[in-house]
Length: 198
View 1 (cartoon, helix red, strand yellow):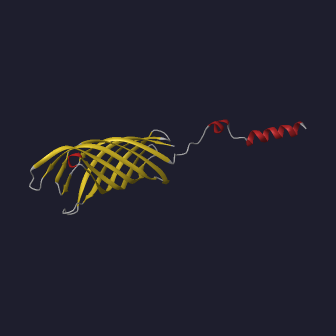
View 2 (cartoon, rainbow, N blue to C red):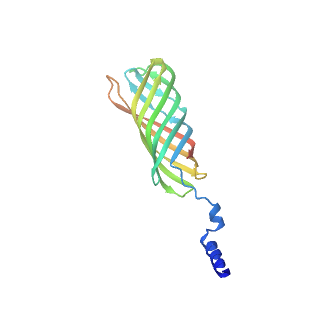
View 3 (cartoon, one colour):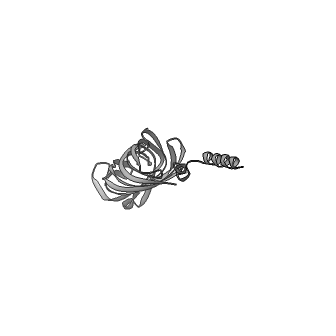
């Protein structure tokens, strides 16, 4: 009987996982990530419109985003941004007509693809499509344009659910108004931010 009890106890002892494994939890990479960032347009560009040419100055910007991981290294979601940018409006002859503060707003379907680096530090490509909206108070109108985004960034994972990043991106806005030939405008941006996953 003692032998049977001893063998049973030894069997339970060897079948049980080590104590370290019992207390260690394997944490999965979160499926959903929220992003907040600040940055600025360092090359806002020009827009040709029926009202003249809009020349934008450098501007500070901020934005939010939510993305869902859909595959190894790939996340898709929504993002938006806002900036208040100084601008001057010239007529067709190049004469200054007025100036003010424009509101630059974006709303995009976007994605990120990690493609290099290690677990903690990695490189990624980003892209998206949506709207680039010009709010022109002096003209009393909001002017939405089709926009595409391309960019690249460097991300540091501070843990399984926290990350920090530095990113460069370029918007391609396609502006068209009656009487004006369709034209594209480039808006370049640098941004830094943080992500939290759950």
